[in-house]
Structure formats: C-alpha cells, structure tokens
Length: 360
Ligand code: FAD
Ligand code: MG
Image (cartoon, rainbow, N blue to C red; front, side, top):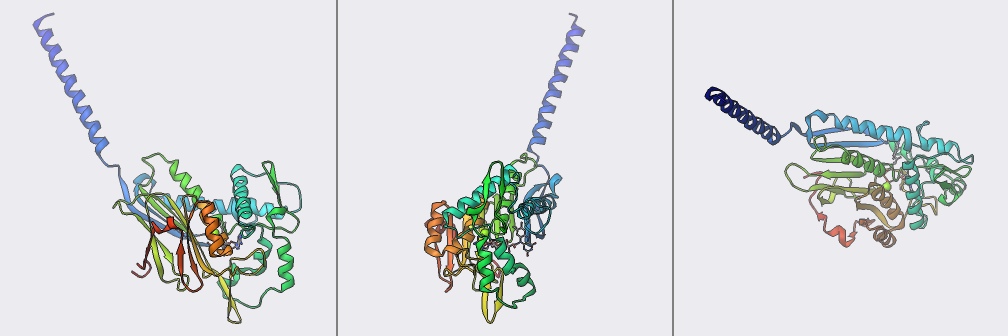
C-alpha cells in the first residue's frame, strides 16, 4: 500500500468515525427530545342520558382528538349494545325477543350478563337488571326531566310489573339469552361503569407514544382515573353531599387507575304530594328503595363492580351494603338520611373530609 493510499484510508476511517459519532449523537438527541404533547385537553358532551367529561393530560399531539374519539366509542356502546331505548341495540333486541328463542350473545355481553346475575344472587335480589318493566312504569327519566310528578303508579300496576322482575327467570348460557315473557332489561345501574372498563382497556392497549400520561373520565355518577397528572399530585374525586348536591362531603385522593361510582336519591326523582320518589327501586317492593340511605359511593378498580354495587348497596342499606362491599372486596362510603357518613376501613385511607371541591 502506498503512503498516499494509507493516508486516504486513514482519512476515510476518520470520516466514517465522525459520521458514526454524529449519527449516535442525533439519535440520542431525538430520543431525549420530549415528543410533542397537548398539556390538558377536555371534551364535554352528553351520552347515555348524562353528562360525559373526558380530560387528558400530556396527550400526544397526533392523538389530540382522543376526547371526540372516545365519546364516539361511548355512543356506539350505547347504540349498538347497551341501550334499552334505542331500537337497534343488542339489549333492545333481547327485550323485543322476550319469551321467544334464545338470542346469541357476544362474549363481552355474555360476561356482562353473567356478572349482573352474580350481583343479583349475592345481593339477595336487591340488584336486578330485569326490572325494566317496572322502571318503564315509574318512568323517572322523563318525569324527572319534565318535573312532571302527576300521580303514582297504582299498587296493581306495580304488582304486575314486579311479577316480570326476576333475574332467575331468564335463560342464560354461552349459546344465548332469552328473557321470560313480559320481562325487560334495564342496564341503567351498570352501563356507565361497564363503559369505563371498555375505555380503560382501550387506553391500556395504546402504544406508549399514543397514550396520555393521565386521564380523568366522568360518565354521570361514574368516574375513571387513569395514569398520573403531570404535576405528580393524586387525583381528587369529589364525594357529593346528598343533602345538598351543590356541595361536597369531601374527596377521595387516588393514585393511578380507579373507578368511583355514586348512587343517590338526589340524582333523579319526582315529587308527588310533597313526597320524593327517587329512581333506585327495591325489586322486593316495587317502590323506591327505603333502607335509610341517601348516597353510596363505591371505589374499585373494576368499573362494572363500582357501578353495580353502588346501586345494590343503596337498596340493601348500611349494614348489608357494607357486608356486600366487603364480600366483593371493594371500598364503600355511605351517607344516611340524616347526613351521617360511614365507610369501610379501606376507604378511610382515600377519603378526606370537608374540602368543598364544587365551591372551593
Ligand atoms: P345508578 O344507581 O347507577 O342506577 C340507577 C338506575 O338503575 C335506575 O335509573 C334504573 O335504570 C336502574 N335501577 C334502579 N333500581 C335498580 C335495582 N334495584 N337494580 C338494578 N337496576 C336498578 N337516561 C335518559 O334520561 N335518557 C336516555 O336515553 C338514557 N339512556 C341511557 C343509556 C345507557 C346505556 C345508560 C347506561 C343510561 C342511560 N340513561 C338515560 C340514564 C339511566 O336511565 C339512569 O338514569 C342512569 O343510568 C342512573 O344512573 P345513576 O348513576 O344515577 O344511578
Ligand atoms: Mg350504579
């Protein structure tokens, strides 16, 4: 090899080395650069007959429409699967087919029905999603909105509607479901919590560079906290004062993923002759549940359970409700009709009294 060739080789090697160093440096620079995010973005709208609010923190720029996307997802869960009012949903079809041949169920809807049956059994029938004929009779959703109390259903109407309310009458197995003649499903007590589970699964399945750092999603009385806020502080979820729903009793301080659902006698009701009739019904009497409670809040990592059990425990009352919550290993807070608050030992770790988050 000539000296000139050797010189060229040395120069070439030096150049390659420099290029390699520059590329490594550039790669490191790109890796260290935070990917572009939107700090906080909120979408608020209505679905499932209630207000939906979705807030994301540090949302990757390319996914900044995630609020609208998830809202669409909630609406299609309602329209395609859960709604007992929209004629083309699966649940509406099941209702139309009552007394007929079994209808096939998707895996997810089968699991939801089995889980509902489990809560029905373990609550001694206090929770029963086959009370659709009874809830149609009371028709709280429309009456509460129009403030039209008018008159009570008659005892005879209630007795008849109650005869259709019994989860034990439905045929349910992997091949399908069939309601008894006259029976009707109403998933108002579980739909929002179950939808939160679907949203959480969606977020979990996103790749890391598409997922927000944190999110808080509220579907009426059911709330999902997810991930973390950029300031590193815990999520604060208000516990509404059932005696005055413009104020709070305190808040739950939560880290990471949790579902919180509240059922209360102040949510939907009508007043007839000075008496308040609220929307959580006792399937044993056919009348609004009257077990001494005004509000129940359940904390769980499972959205379905938080929603189903807030309703079930409201119907059961304090002692039995707290037993059922312990049985399912969820945390519970109850407020009785006089405003007294009681809670499971586990809930005490999360609950902070007094600070009013609605009117700070
Ligand atoms: P929860 O305690 O969680 O649930 C109470 C509701 O559960 C009652 O309203 C009744 O539907 C049912 N229920 C009552 N007692 C029992 C019991 N013992 N066991 C089991 N279930 C019981 N509202 C509208 O006004 N218009 C709509 O179009 C509409 N569509 C909806 C669609 C979906 C998919 C869902 C999930 C809800 C919808 N809603 C709608 C709201 C619904 O009617 C209820 O008012 C709402 O779900 C009550 O929720 P909550 O958190 O206040 O109380
Ligand atoms: Mg509920």
